[in-house]
Length: 215
Ligand code: GAR
Image 1 (cartoon, rainbow, N blue to C red):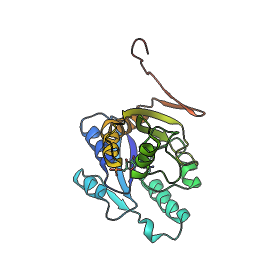
Image 2: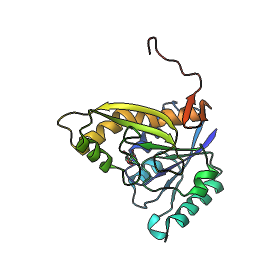
Image 3: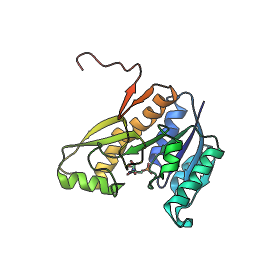
Image 4: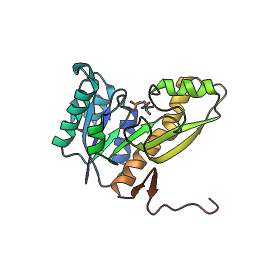
């Protein structure tokens, strides 16, 4: 079983998608070992408690700088003997020592088609505001392995979502979650836990991938 920690900061709908997929047997070989929240009031903590997953709060507000915050998370992950770390709506950048120690073992979900609308400052609703301001016809979500550049790691999975003319940032955010994030994040975890992901430079190879005829 792959001991997995999920890092959250807010509502936790992506966490819920992982919990649901786990209940339905869609992420075999994955143990949901811990949910770690940067925010003591995150609703994600309630979701974890309902699912019987141990929760830990590492409150960003009680650390003076990014390094000591990231360090505290690092220690907790090591202590819990975590193999896979999943950032599910986690709103902070992890520092190089942690990222290095967990190379190709940290998965993040981003609510746009990377390399569009990503990087520093692009998180949550802001991503969808930027996509609508730009006038794109298609958006979506991307699951990546975390590296030291923000949203710059190798892409595991992407899924597109059509933008509607009457979309608001909130309606687009909701559709991207429902149609893309909640599907590809559990799928990426399942692929990792099945040992089907191989990172080659910037590319992630999915072992045993079958393409439909004509693709
Ligand atoms: C999600 O849309 C997630 O992709 C995004 O924040 C939201 C959190 O929702 N993450 C980022 O923007 C990270 N760059 P959730 O707490 O309900 O899962």
